[in-house]
Image (cartoon, rainbow, N blue to C red; front, side):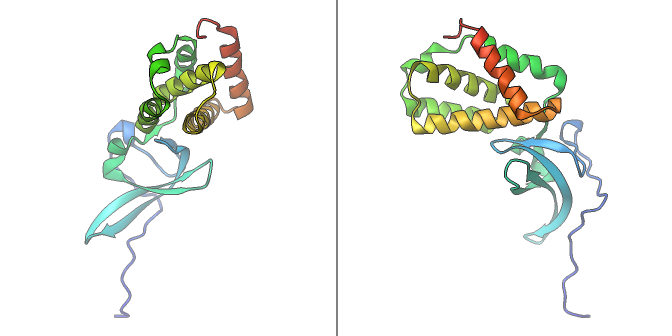
Length: 188
């Protein structure tokens, strides 16, 4: 015996059986809440506290961040597939809806908390609501620093996922979104 520990690292052709909503293989694109679109680059087995666990290794496209996601907790953390192209019109419909005007009477930090909670859900529909509300709010008043950051985050998450789903440029998606807002004056 050489004294070396056998490696638990395995990244080739590992099959992980999960519910259909959570089944990913190497090369798949997925969305991690708050971070956006990434690619499953490996499935690794590691020993944690003396027990073997499998992890999806996901590289976020925007910033090359590598995230280890326990396979058993995929649903709990909200890892999901990117939006289907057929569902994109539902996102655009959210932009056409009137926003909740009670947000205007709230303090910026209360709005910030509510919007942050929506972004953390990982739902593209919640992210679209945050983006819509802040887009419209910024037309009538200056956003606080925190709200501006949330607006930028929501825009990045939304545009990146929609462009990935449609296999088009982010500039094209952003142009479509801005056209939707400029055509709809009922939101203002």
